[in-house]
Image 1 (cartoon, helix red, strand yellow):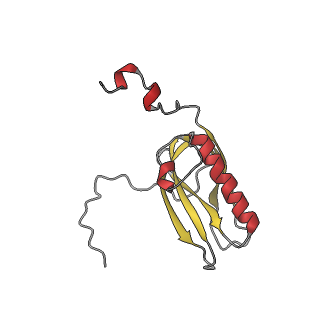
Image 2 (cartoon, rainbow, N blue to C red):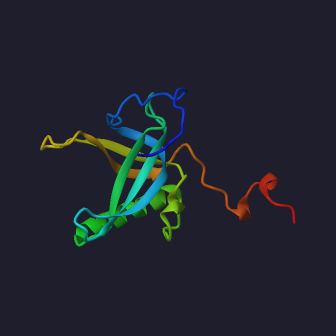
Image 3 (cartoon, rainbow, N blue to C red):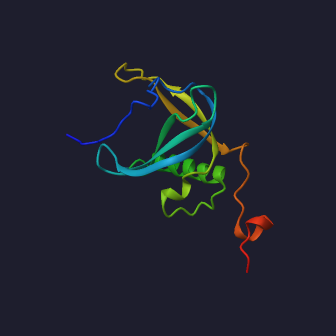
Length: 154
């Protein structure tokens, strides 16, 4: 049992657990964790994206991707590092990542598709297919080129 002591009477109920429609969305990474693989022989980085801009009903929705950064399958690892590089390029990150939280909160565009389960055992789910810089955001200003009103007085 978990004591939660909360009141959700003023919270909008979740409308759908269906995948978001396939398309391009402005999103940001809002959570990440390193998890062991089901087989126990590697680890994957789980990234949660929150949609910032899209058709009605999609803003605030979540999509996830897993990057097999530690896996006996070399091709899976190559694909994962290629995706991580694409994410870093899309958010203007240097690519030197010490902690996945460095990737959080930066807008980027993601192409989302819907993957059907041919076996019929699982529901359809979203899959992130591509990462690009967001057209709706300007690159973050560094301290050296911040506008005059944002600079600290010496």
